[in-house]
Image (cartoon, rainbow, N blue to C red; front, side, top):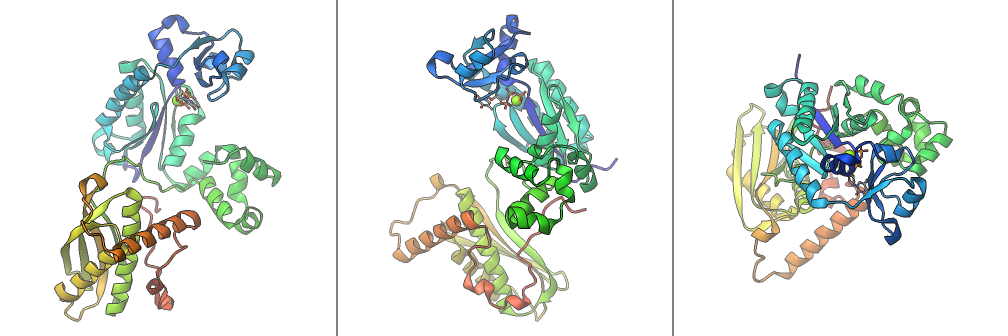
Length: 411
Ligand code: TTP
Ligand code: MG
């Protein structure tokens, strides 16, 4: 059995706060239990035990409403410190199997198990062990979904709650088949409004969206929404498990369909890389103290050259300039074409670690403000919204090489 190229688990504890209350006060077992603020003080429901959910009580509901729906309910105030403590115990179980953990809340996390298979076996087996150890060590029940990406894993963990282990077999066909019978409300981010719109178009099941003609769909929902929803309907999702730890570097590289020979074309590639890297640094709130250039020639000879900055930077210009200077002055291309170029921001530092230059020059300030504007526009209108003038020149001969291939999801 080959390992999955990518294996993600989504773990979500069943009726978490209620389960902890029942664990600590066993007399609550089997009763309709509501954990939340009191009805007479305009409280809201944090969660309800499955017995109370039968009456229609659910999280975020005003406690007054919940009390009307289920007058016989037993009420408890949340005890956050206890939930935090148990959440820590659960995390310890995860850490035995992977260091790639993205907690979403106290009772919910994504785990990247791709690299865990060599030691621990198939993703399903790892998920089973995690579920078992959580139960053995905390007496709490978790539902787990396993799939090739986050979206599918999240849908899977929720599908047969409680005490579920649902595996979506690896592959695009498998993902499609898994999603097909589900109602459109299972599409990530599809709220009641979107669902009502889809249903009005005759699209009640995800299968209907999978079959829908993309142009027909775009004409009715708009290009962006149509593509987004179709992507989800097909089970496509490339987001990484975000561990929150600082990356060691942020970089881009590209192998060209045809070796580059023109210095200008190389510099243009580097500008695209620098622009992307700088935006990603700013998004992460990090600055780089160094940058590394990688050059591979047509004959596969490979050079790397590094440059240290006087001051940490998260801007396009210094990254690009350093790359260009290293390419011009410190790499001997020996008249050969360039097969691959890469640029990597290194030695990343967080705000508390850099001290701003004593005399911040005005030009620097202007560049910083311009960069922030670019980020805001891109956040609103997409990454293609703002492109540097120089990137657009010679567009005709652009091979589209700025698009990196998505990790892990290629057939
Ligand atoms: P959930 O995992 O959404 O709910 P749950 O664990 O109670 O139930 P399920 O079996 O369906 O997973 O949230 C986890 C905890 O977070 C929940 O027990 C209480 C808290 N919470 C709130 O305080 N307010 C909310 O609106 C939600 C959704 C959760
Ligand atoms: Mg839960």
